[in-house]
Each structure stands twice: as C-alpha cells, then as structure tokens.
Image: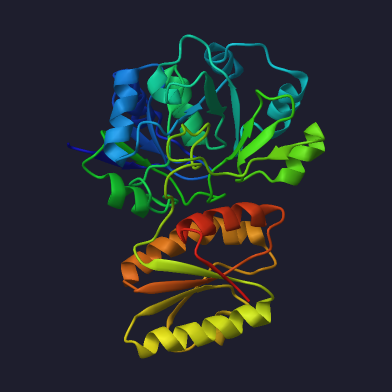
Length: 348
C-alpha cells in the first residue's frame, strides 16, 4: 500500500491536507493522526468494512473493542442508545476534549466490528486540533486504537507511527509529540457506580471530584472473555527485550537493580535500566534511560513508550525498571509498565 505522509503544525493547520484525509475516512480508508494521548489509527466508525482495515493494519485481535472519537455532542448522541445521565454531563463539561473515554450502551447505528459484538461503545473527544479538525471535516465518528503493531509500545511521536504503519495505511498525519503520552482513562458509565476499566491520562482523584464514588476494575479478563474496553486482555506495550520491574523503597530498588545489572552483564547480556533523573547516575556498565524527574509523574507518563521504543533501537537483552508510587498519575504509569513487563515484578 502506498502511504502518504504529511507533517502538520497544530497552530497553523493546512486544511487542504485535512480535507484529503477526511475524504479517505469517508471512503472507508485508514488515516493515522495525533491526539494528546497517543497517535491513533483511524477509520470510519460507522463502517464495519473500514474498521476491519484497522485490525489488519495492527495485527489486532477482532475481539478487542475500539474507541470511537467524536468532535461534537451530536456525534456522541448518534452513537449511544440512551440519554446522558447528570454525572456524565458533568464529566463531559469538565474533561472533554481530553484523555477520558466513556462507555455507554450503543445505538443500532454502530457496527459490531467497533464494539467486538458487545452492546456498549467507548467514546471520547480528543484534545488535539488536528484530530478534531479531521473528525469534524470527515463528518462522522472515527474509530481509532493506538497506531502501533498490536502488543508493542504505543506511538507518541511521528517517528514511531512511520516505523510501524508505513505501507499499512492510506495516510499518516504527523504532528508533535503527544503531550499526555499514555492512553485515555476508560470509565464505564453503564453501571450504577461508574467503573474505571483502564487508568490513563485522567486520574481517579479527578473523576471522584466530579462523581463522588468510583470503582476500579481489576483490569484483566480471562482468555475466553470479550474485554469491555481496550487494554484489558492481550499483551500490551511490550518492548523487544524482557522487562522486570523492581518495586519497594527507592534505596532498595537501586541496590537490587545494581545487583541484577552486574549479574546479567557478567553473563554477557546487554542490560538496560529504566530509571529517573534522580537515580540515573546510580547505575554503571549498562544502558540507562531516564523517564524524567520523580517529582513530576505526568512527565514520567509522557515518556514511557518513547523510552521503551528507544531500548528496542539500542537492542538490549533485558530491561530493569524502577517502580513508582501507585497514586494519581502513578496508577497509569504502573499499569503500562506492568503490562510491558508481563507483570514480572520483584519486590524488595
């Protein structure tokens, strides 16, 4: 497939290019576009034929539901099968556009390919001008998972999507690095008490400030179950090398990683360490990448996928990663890291 690639300035968007991309979407083609979370691989959310092309490009299992991206309330109401509740309206007013996906009962207009045959649909409004212009000019909702090979780290820069999607999609729209850097928080609004199915760019505390009580899902489903939201079933975000998380008090984490790095280096293995600004200088004779300062976990979150992909380019044999406190944005950070490591965790 011949893939067109365009670089766009979010502050001065070439609308002729957006119109070309919108026409591809209307004609059931595929377009990669930036959002504030990660880059998305988009197709017409109202066409089962178009949505099948997303699964083919990613190598994604078809029982993994997609998120429909909208640019207006009218698009949302077209997709859902019941009126908005008061709490939902408050969330939308406060956090849309933004990194929040809401799950509703779907209308009869949504093809089963988008929802993995379930009676619910996940919807969000991205906080990115390129994305919003594309959806608006296409005139229809766009189904879009992350624009990466299924199971690998999500893409947050143009370099990532070009590497993964060149020759697999009709067009790639390149913007800047994604500001949030992890996927959206997914909140199921179909239950009496809303349930977080995937932590992400909006924290549990921010949701509770609006809704009061919010439950949190265990996050994984069985092999024979259909996941209610993306990211709940299959291996995700994994680098090429095996990855082990070391969890505990920071001084103990550092000591344990130092020991492990020395042990594996002595075996002739190329060791990578995923550290922070405060600890990067503690590790010797291995390749160290910092996610940023522990004082700003939002920066840590924005760099996870980029650094995992950097380890792939370096070609390390094993990665040891420092754990972070699981509160606020740290919940999303550790969710992505645990899945990248296949839940391989050493506690010290």
